[in-house]
Length: 431
Image (tube, rainbow, N blue to C red; front, side, top):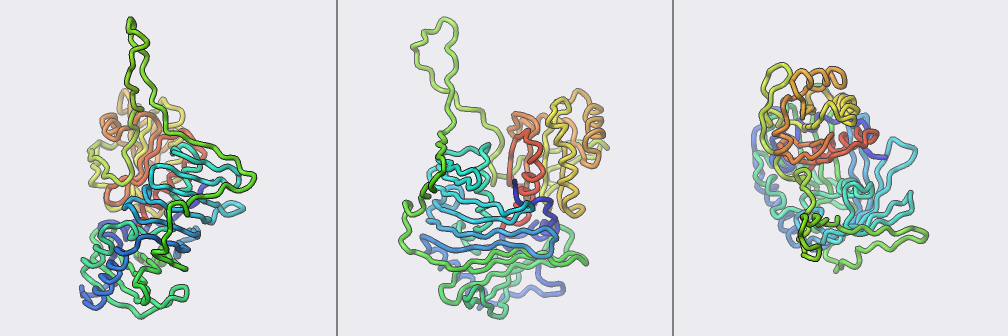
């Protein structure tokens, strides 16, 4: 099972689009203003973060203002050796509330060298080694990342906030027993249809480190939507070592080792001595890595209108590369309609990228039969090559800035809606 089923928080896209990291719009009618004392507190926090080498804390991420529950909690230990979460040595153990009869649990360790240990507590299996994305235990990482603040991995923490048009100090507040300075950093929201947004940092008066991150949006007459991450029991620079992050195999659990994908050497050509050593051929590159900017494109829709990647910026986007003669692609079409309907209107872009079709009519017929509510872009074969798509169906989820959040090629249609919904939510709430 996957978390975040039918997540309906599209208004957050309007908040996140077009902003510097963790910066939102000031209240309506507010004039830009920088309180230098408040800005100095942000700088003080940035200086404190730069001196942190190890961290241990409990974390709670939740959301208010939406009917579907978003709730993650757990414990984190990490050693700050990298600016990439996937390369930072850490152990994360926690749970996420689920629509099912019980919470989903995650418990994993990353060693910083490409290896991961993940505990499947229901199956009583410990996966260890170079776990690949096609292994369900790999998905624990995306759940655990909900407990982290991106500012912990930045080389220039709080830089966006300190460059904001408006920086003010709010009244002091307590977070899990820790008295905090509260700083609101804002800049004008230029995309997403306007509205009111805000970002606030709660910085401990004792060590100046963050204890709470909050980002919210209020659009039209809708109730405000707020994403919150709270920390408690924060301990830093305690001498944490890599061996302290290791997970001890629970009694009665099976251990499954995962090696790196093998490089298969090609068969020697006819007449070549089999004893001749042949260099192994690396596996084909499939998809573009998350975090990179998506390549630009321009395609025609079924109505003749032109659609560019630039047109999609401002909201998360789902690009589904489909082929009408591919059975899983046909089954994926109705799922795309469900994902589109799970979010408020115009908060998410969903497009079917028609590939390998002999005529435009073949593509539009496929659309009309399988996903009439999802627009189709015609002749996407060159774009598929540009995006390193090797099979169908394949899916990209982009954030409001056109960066890749997730890529996957799958025929696992029963879990497709959950995967796409979770990826869109990640694009919306990325701090």
